[in-house]
Amino acid sequence: MKRNLLFIFLFAPIFHYAQINTDKVDALVSPKTAEKIITVGGLEADIAGFNNQSIQFAIDAVAKTGGTVKLNAGLYELHAPVQMKSNVKLIGSGSETILKRGKGIQTKYIIDADFGELKLTVENSDGFEIGMKIQVTDDVSDGCWNVSTAYISDIVDNIIYIDKGLIRDYRSDKNGLISNTSSVIEVIDAENVSISNLTADGNRAENYFADGCNSAGVLILRSKKVTVDNVHVKDFNGEGISWQITENVTVRNSEISGSGNTGLHPGTGSPFSIIENNDIHHNDMDGLFICWRVYQSQVTGNRMHHNGRFGICTGHKDTDVIFEGNHIFDNKSDGVNLRGERETNAPHRNTFVKNIIENNGSDGGAYGFSINSPAQDLLLKENIFKNSAKTQKAAIYVYSGGSTPKLENNQFDEHEMGEMVFEKK
Image 1 (cartoon, rainbow, N blue to C red):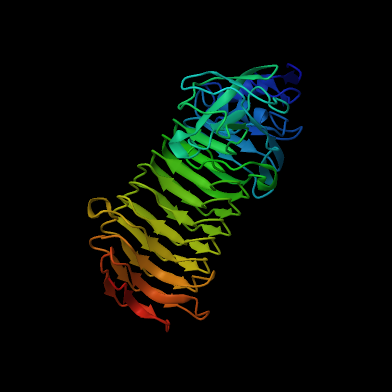
Image 2 (cartoon, rainbow, N blue to C red):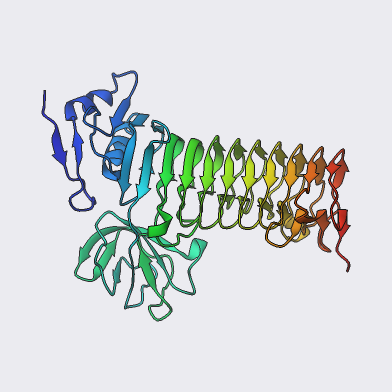
């Protein structure tokens, strides 16, 4: 039997090690083994370390055949995102399995960073390490698909080399910045993945703001058949869970709180999403922001509350979605907001049934449900509009650009402006 060995991984930050029982790992991932499981965390585990390298080694090993990475309870320090692979399950041991981002680092680049370029000349490279994932922006290109992300492949003095070419021209004289901003866990170009039974701690107080299309507490990008179950995503300085260009993503039984942006953000063409039995609260923006082309999806049994703007916001081609049995309350603005769209792009054929919409507008008054979109076949059925705090000015407010919903058997508390109010043209 081989002794436990110390490995330093390629692209790993200096002085972070994973202790591995190599014989046991080889046996566990052998094609002859029926169940492929690698445990991480602690002296009794297959891989003893409590860091992203240890988790990543296990994921990469079981990805060869498909299998499970089981994380023991403990605090795992992350200097780069945990990268999920196809046919891998990542299972924690409950809320005491904590994956926590390390401290954020940011500097300016002092020479323009051009499209396709693989290096950045920076003001100060201190704190950056090989293997970190970075975000590159300037004041012109600082959001969504204008943001570049890559991994650091080398550092020489004040030049940082990256593994993927930049996607825009960035100006150093327009507040050009590079930071180690990145996700806690990411699923990119993968399928048949599950993440469950753990805490993803974004360490918001010590990290810079992350763009939501490229980073999140859990980021799912260009992937299919992904499940996030019983995961607490907390205090990420950006979006809690973001999934973009996906199919069949399920987020259930999870808590998303303290995000510096939106709690949940499905978008950029993410049909067949299932969002159920989650507690989404105290995020800076919306509890659930449904972006572009999220269709034939279900939002059921969730609690969206105490968020900084809307409980739910939906719009561009977000059609054929069922919202059922949700409790949407104490959000600072509207409980539900259908944002403005042209008729061809409106959120048609959406159904809201048996939801409780309660005491929204806590930041000076708003509406329980607002409609600013010419959505066809919008049905509100058997919902309860509560207003004991008198913060919802109207139960339903229809802007001049909005369509009139079909109402069936809804219940209304008294609202100052009325049950359904139309904006005067």
